Image (cartoon, rainbow, N blue to C red; front, side, top):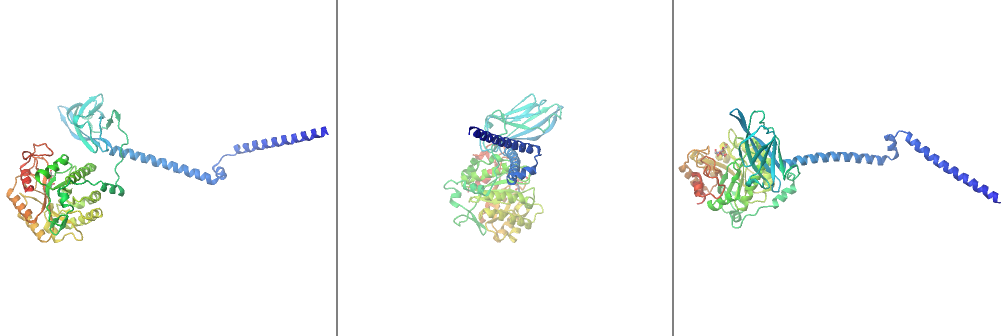
Length: 523
Ligand code: IDC
């Protein structure tokens, strides 16, 4: 019996050992088989097709996402450089001086971020042979090859959305050394500025809504408080109560050329000392520095929005003037005008004090039919945002031919006024007759610009003609803005050319034109 059970146990052991050997062998051989066979995509796919496809798709998505991300990042970086803080180096001309070459470099530091810029420095290489000459608005030093530019007291802090203009002349032994092809670098706190500070403001519909909500509120008891939204009723401008109302004030010179006069204290001086209720913001389009030329669009729009804000806070009315002149025909820059007025009217849709002047002075051979065509494409764009603001439309021959406009006025629109401009020493009865004719035909005529000298903006003052014009202004209750707020050495400037003040002028600071105009506005 003992032997029998021993045999059974041994047999079982053999069987188990055999099974183990078999299993091990089988595993080993299948491993081998797999390693021998080439691993192809199809074999892998055949293992689990769905899962594999998913993985591949994921990889592709991930790849394109990283690609997108890098382009996005690149764009962001470019945008941030363009829209946050940056330095612009521009050519100020060059000339020969005693066998050397003098190059003038204009340097503008832009702070388009919403924070103050402090502790800044600009470095530009390529100045090894340079010797610093005349310079302004900064401290300049050349060490080795590098020009170092730092601040003076007054531009040590560059507030948000401001630009500081600096410049210098550098003398080089040879004309080849003094090129303008140099790359300025901005350092903040000793570090090269590459930080992505802020993105450009993309104006989505929601943001436009937001912009509207941030509406500036006028002071109590001001013109705007008392008279509110204006409209055109026949030949008149009427206030919120339907009473005849007259706008009277000052036009800026070109915003690009005299930005310093766009300040709240200046407008306040006109309101409180002169009795003005209107400011016109003249933004040239065609001239050098103009919006459709080489002008800095963002800077110009900032001047417009500052101007509108200051006027609004002071309870004054304000004209946004698309100042065409050397561009002759408003159709020349129609697309830009449409985009501009779309943005402006969206922003100021809820403002009761903003008027839009869509083309200062069409001239050359521009016909009324062309101005009308332009007006009929710009007006609906404004109306889509702003239902009722007054829109002022220019007329042929530097806005003199209101009679022609009155023969064929714009129909199907409300709150439209038509521009007449006069320069008293040049334009007399001939233009006043046109105004009379237009007025008799029921046109609302608006004198958005005038002066009492000749049409060049310079020359002698014609007081008699100026009085004749004001008789007509009084008779028809016409609104007007006097050209121009600057101290440029020309008769039409209202500030004396030797006065550097940008607000709070006394009569001694004014030109002859300024004194006369102040008296007229203040009556
Ligand atoms: C003049 C300025 C002058 C500037 C010139 C540019 O007074 O400083 O150099 O423009 O071309 C207008 C225009 C207005 C003119 C003004 C005087 O609307 O822009 O300003 N004028 O020439 N129409 C008639 C006269």
